[in-house]
Figure 1 (tube, rainbow over the protein chains, first blue to last red):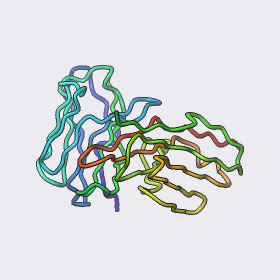
Figure 2 (cartoon, helix red, strand yellow):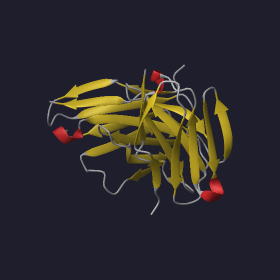
Figure 3 (cartoon, chains in turn yellow, brown):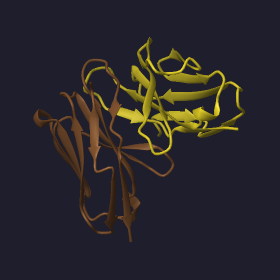
Figure 4 (cartoon, helix red, strand yellow):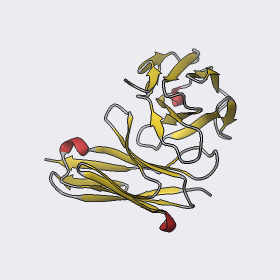
Length: 113
Length: 109
Protein backbone atom coordinates (compact mmCIF):
# COMPACT_ATOMS: atom_id res chain seq x y z
CA UNK A 1 0.00 0.00 0.00
CA UNK A 2 2.55 2.53 -1.20
CA UNK A 3 1.20 6.05 -0.93
CA UNK A 4 3.56 7.95 -3.22
CA UNK A 5 4.67 6.02 -6.27
CA UNK A 6 7.33 7.05 -8.72
CA UNK A 7 7.88 5.50 -12.11
CA UNK A 8 10.17 4.26 -13.34
CA UNK A 9 12.56 3.37 -10.50
CA UNK A 10 15.50 3.51 -12.90
CA UNK A 11 15.67 5.44 -16.15
CA UNK A 12 18.48 5.50 -18.67
CA UNK A 13 18.25 8.16 -21.33
CA UNK A 14 20.48 9.43 -24.07
CA UNK A 15 22.15 12.80 -23.95
CA UNK A 16 19.68 15.34 -25.35
CA UNK A 17 16.72 12.94 -25.56
CA UNK A 18 13.62 14.19 -23.70
CA UNK A 19 12.58 12.15 -20.70
CA UNK A 20 9.55 12.22 -18.40
CA UNK A 21 9.41 11.00 -14.82
CA UNK A 22 6.09 10.41 -13.11
CA UNK A 23 4.74 10.56 -9.60
CA UNK A 24 1.34 9.49 -8.35
CA UNK A 25 -0.21 9.61 -4.89
CA UNK A 26 -3.18 8.04 -3.15
CA UNK A 27 -3.16 10.47 -0.21
CA UNK A 28 -5.22 13.20 -1.89
CA UNK A 29 -2.59 15.70 -0.79
CA UNK A 30 -2.71 19.21 -2.23
CA UNK A 31 1.02 19.88 -2.03
CA UNK A 32 3.56 18.11 -4.22
CA UNK A 33 7.31 18.60 -4.54
CA UNK A 34 10.04 17.54 -6.95
CA UNK A 35 13.57 17.31 -5.59
CA UNK A 36 16.84 16.50 -7.31
CA UNK A 37 19.50 14.69 -5.30
CA UNK A 38 23.05 14.16 -6.48
CA UNK A 39 25.51 11.81 -4.89
CA UNK A 40 26.40 12.66 -1.28
CA UNK A 41 24.27 15.80 -1.31
CA UNK A 42 20.99 16.85 0.27
CA UNK A 43 17.83 16.90 -1.84
CA UNK A 44 17.49 20.16 -3.79
CA UNK A 45 14.02 21.53 -4.51
CA UNK A 46 13.16 21.99 -8.19
CA UNK A 47 9.42 22.79 -8.08
CA UNK A 48 6.45 22.65 -5.80
CA UNK A 49 2.70 22.82 -6.24
CA UNK A 50 0.09 24.09 -3.83
CA UNK A 51 -2.88 22.46 -5.48
CA UNK A 52 -2.66 23.83 -9.04
CA UNK A 53 -0.51 26.77 -8.02
CA UNK A 54 2.94 26.13 -9.52
CA UNK A 55 6.14 27.42 -7.90
CA UNK A 56 9.46 27.26 -9.69
CA UNK A 57 12.70 27.65 -7.73
CA UNK A 58 14.80 30.52 -9.04
CA UNK A 59 17.79 28.32 -9.84
CA UNK A 60 15.90 25.47 -11.50
CA UNK A 61 17.21 25.24 -15.07
CA UNK A 62 14.78 26.01 -17.92
CA UNK A 63 15.50 22.50 -19.19
CA UNK A 64 13.26 21.20 -16.39
CA UNK A 65 9.50 21.50 -16.65
CA UNK A 66 6.64 20.08 -14.62
CA UNK A 67 2.97 19.27 -15.16
CA UNK A 68 0.24 18.41 -12.71
CA UNK A 69 -2.89 17.40 -14.64
CA UNK A 70 -4.82 16.48 -11.48
CA UNK A 71 -4.35 16.05 -7.73
CA UNK A 72 -3.04 12.52 -8.02
CA UNK A 73 -0.40 12.87 -10.72
CA UNK A 74 2.64 15.01 -11.30
CA UNK A 75 5.29 14.80 -14.03
CA UNK A 76 8.83 16.04 -14.37
CA UNK A 77 9.98 16.65 -17.94
CA UNK A 78 13.62 17.10 -18.82
CA UNK A 79 13.68 18.52 -22.31
CA UNK A 80 17.32 17.94 -23.20
CA UNK A 81 19.11 15.94 -20.53
CA UNK A 82 22.78 16.59 -20.04
CA UNK A 83 25.32 14.48 -18.21
CA UNK A 84 24.97 16.82 -15.24
CA UNK A 85 21.30 15.92 -14.88
CA UNK A 86 22.11 12.38 -13.81
CA UNK A 87 20.72 12.16 -10.29
CA UNK A 88 18.03 10.72 -8.05
CA UNK A 89 14.71 12.51 -8.51
CA UNK A 90 12.39 12.47 -5.51
CA UNK A 91 8.71 13.30 -5.40
CA UNK A 92 6.97 14.17 -2.14
CA UNK A 93 3.48 15.14 -1.02
CA UNK A 94 1.89 16.65 2.01
CA UNK A 95 -1.55 17.84 3.03
CA UNK A 96 -2.65 21.43 3.06
CA UNK A 97 -1.68 23.47 6.08
CA UNK A 98 1.51 24.44 7.80
CA UNK A 99 2.03 21.51 10.08
CA UNK A 100 1.43 18.46 7.94
CA UNK A 101 3.79 15.57 7.40
CA UNK A 102 5.51 15.01 4.06
CA UNK A 103 5.85 11.59 2.42
CA UNK A 104 8.32 10.63 -0.29
CA UNK A 105 8.19 8.17 -3.15
CA UNK A 106 10.92 5.62 -3.81
CA UNK A 107 12.67 7.94 -6.23
CA UNK A 108 13.74 7.61 -9.86
CA UNK A 109 17.45 7.20 -10.52
CA UNK A 110 18.25 8.85 -13.85
CA UNK A 111 21.34 7.93 -15.85
CA UNK A 112 22.32 9.95 -18.92
CA UNK A 113 24.52 8.23 -21.50
CA UNK B 1 18.10 33.20 5.30
CA UNK B 2 16.30 30.02 6.22
CA UNK B 3 18.81 27.35 7.19
CA UNK B 4 18.87 23.83 8.56
CA UNK B 5 22.19 22.59 9.87
CA UNK B 6 23.01 19.05 10.92
CA UNK B 7 25.87 17.68 12.96
CA UNK B 8 28.03 15.72 12.87
CA UNK B 9 28.39 15.29 9.09
CA UNK B 10 29.83 11.81 9.54
CA UNK B 11 29.66 9.32 12.37
CA UNK B 12 31.18 5.88 12.76
CA UNK B 13 29.89 3.62 15.53
CA UNK B 14 30.59 0.19 16.83
CA UNK B 15 27.52 -2.02 16.79
CA UNK B 16 25.66 -1.66 20.09
CA UNK B 17 26.74 1.92 20.74
CA UNK B 18 24.37 4.85 21.22
CA UNK B 19 24.43 8.10 19.27
CA UNK B 20 22.86 11.54 19.10
CA UNK B 21 22.36 13.46 15.88
CA UNK B 22 21.59 17.15 15.99
CA UNK B 23 19.57 19.48 13.79
CA UNK B 24 19.58 23.26 14.26
CA UNK B 25 17.17 25.51 12.41
CA UNK B 26 17.28 29.24 11.90
CA UNK B 27 13.67 30.22 12.57
CA UNK B 28 10.51 28.88 14.18
CA UNK B 29 9.13 25.82 12.42
CA UNK B 30 5.66 24.44 11.72
CA UNK B 31 7.00 21.02 10.86
CA UNK B 32 10.22 19.16 11.60
CA UNK B 33 10.84 15.71 10.19
CA UNK B 34 13.64 13.16 10.47
CA UNK B 35 14.30 10.79 7.57
CA UNK B 36 16.57 7.83 6.98
CA UNK B 37 17.73 7.41 3.41
CA UNK B 38 18.05 3.73 2.64
CA UNK B 39 20.72 2.24 0.33
CA UNK B 40 18.28 2.44 -2.60
CA UNK B 41 17.81 6.16 -2.09
CA UNK B 42 14.32 6.23 -0.64
CA UNK B 43 13.64 8.66 2.20
CA UNK B 44 11.94 6.79 5.01
CA UNK B 45 9.94 8.81 7.52
CA UNK B 46 11.28 8.36 11.05
CA UNK B 47 9.60 11.13 12.99
CA UNK B 48 7.27 14.02 12.42
CA UNK B 49 8.14 16.16 15.44
CA UNK B 50 7.61 19.94 15.37
CA UNK B 51 7.88 19.89 19.17
CA UNK B 52 8.14 17.49 22.09
CA UNK B 53 9.52 13.97 22.31
CA UNK B 54 8.60 10.77 20.48
CA UNK B 55 9.94 7.25 20.62
CA UNK B 56 9.81 4.38 18.18
CA UNK B 57 11.71 1.31 19.29
CA UNK B 58 15.42 2.07 19.54
CA UNK B 59 14.93 5.51 18.04
CA UNK B 60 13.65 8.61 19.74
CA UNK B 61 13.55 12.28 18.88
CA UNK B 62 13.17 15.53 20.76
CA UNK B 63 12.47 18.97 19.34
CA UNK B 64 12.89 22.08 21.48
CA UNK B 65 11.14 24.57 19.25
CA UNK B 66 11.90 27.60 21.43
CA UNK B 67 15.63 26.88 21.18
CA UNK B 68 15.47 25.88 17.51
CA UNK B 69 16.97 22.44 17.60
CA UNK B 70 16.01 18.80 17.32
CA UNK B 71 17.87 15.67 18.39
CA UNK B 72 17.63 12.13 17.07
CA UNK B 73 18.78 9.39 19.44
CA UNK B 74 19.75 5.95 18.25
CA UNK B 75 20.31 3.38 20.96
CA UNK B 76 21.97 -0.03 20.64
CA UNK B 77 22.88 0.70 17.04
CA UNK B 78 22.80 -2.07 14.43
CA UNK B 79 24.51 -2.35 11.07
CA UNK B 80 21.12 -1.86 9.42
CA UNK B 81 21.01 1.64 10.92
CA UNK B 82 23.77 2.70 8.54
CA UNK B 83 22.89 5.32 5.97
CA UNK B 84 22.21 9.02 5.81
CA UNK B 85 19.90 10.75 8.25
CA UNK B 86 18.27 13.99 7.18
CA UNK B 87 16.23 16.48 9.08
CA UNK B 88 13.92 18.78 7.15
CA UNK B 89 11.90 21.77 8.30
CA UNK B 90 8.85 23.62 7.14
CA UNK B 91 9.22 27.18 8.30
CA UNK B 92 5.99 29.07 7.73
CA UNK B 93 3.06 29.37 5.37
CA UNK B 94 3.52 27.62 2.08
CA UNK B 95 7.28 27.39 2.12
CA UNK B 96 8.81 24.15 0.88
CA UNK B 97 10.51 21.56 3.04
CA UNK B 98 14.12 22.66 3.66
CA UNK B 99 16.71 19.92 4.19
CA UNK B 100 19.89 19.84 6.19
CA UNK B 101 22.97 18.32 4.58
CA UNK B 102 22.55 15.08 6.47
CA UNK B 103 24.58 12.92 8.84
CA UNK B 104 26.19 9.84 7.29
CA UNK B 105 26.16 7.05 9.86
CA UNK B 106 28.25 3.92 9.53
CA UNK B 107 27.70 1.15 12.07
CA UNK B 108 30.40 -1.50 12.03
CA UNK B 109 30.11 -5.00 13.46
